[in-house]
Length: 246
Length: 246
Image 1 (cartoon, rainbow over the protein chains, first blue to last red):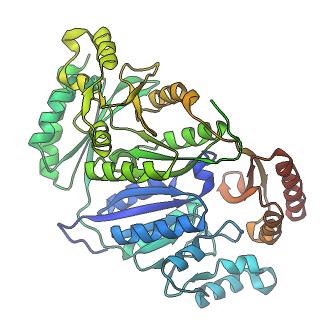
Image 2: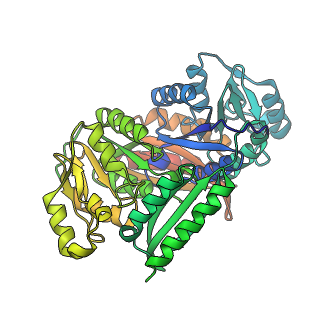
Image 3: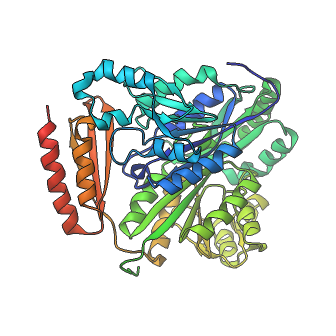
């Protein structure tokens, strides 16, 4: 991975799948990708969850690939009728969907010619010009075409693909993060916190109230790529919270 | 709630919050809203997760409120400096942010004039023309302006707000759902499943492979607002799966 210093690299994740929108399946790829990208200096800056509808996939891919440095998609690259991501990505790039020789060979080696039916062969098709992304869990690959990375929806497979492709990404300075939790009330600390944010413009201060079994309170998350400023900010916020603890 | 029959009502959820994008906080509102909306005949058709950046919030609200029947937002309506949703929604609608008399009265009653500082007063401000959405957990309200429903990010508060506003929504026929799980391989059942999908055009058949402690397999989810077709489809899929169980 190459690190350039001052540029911020922004990524968009497209989660393709009716099962996420219906609430039946809880997505696990967003949180994984948000954390992993941050570690290599790339900011996950938007996520879209869209249904398995060709025109929606095509228009979303085309809109976001122009506005973000990197686009990741999850879901819809399996063998069944509802796996339509690859056709849509090919259409978005106005290229043909082709049988990739390396993916074909890997599948022949794995399944043998008898079990390699038409459905499984679909998984060896990629948009013309795409580079394969392998994974250690399944034989079907993901792929990269320009700045778009097409990955599986199953979290274990998606994660394996991500670890393969991550070294090829260029990122900026990783953002460091510090979190302080407190039983203080947001309404009490809000003014002081706003003053600290004003004083530390290079630190992004977020305030997140929580309610759980351990009671109610607030988590203050401070993020910056400047470790010195971040340390000073943590000190100020810490002083503030101490004034309001019950 | 009024039910019209043939129209499909589509909703978009905007999740506002850096903490979700960073992967630190796992969103819980998407799955809740997807399930609840489905029960009242509204299809959650897109979700966008965006950062706490005014121009992004304003442009996203304005884009999606024209394209969906209902827009829900979560997050950013608390008392701290990073709670900027209400200013942005007001700007999106080109109206002023005003102190809502009912919200103000509720907050005076709750906090008394001494504890009701400027930070807390921010939570009584809504875009001009908005109708309050109360909740049973906190005193700060959400609100509705035209087809946009602005709710808290804390799941318990968001859920309470949703249950208050749900009776005011118009939906279509609720979509019924049936799920069959199997140890069959997706690549084996894909062709047969595609044929069943072709025969049952009114049923949306999704195939979702899983990998977990209980082994690998596939979940077939069938959705339709037509109970009779759905039942017949379940029977066909069930026959198919039985052929391929190990």
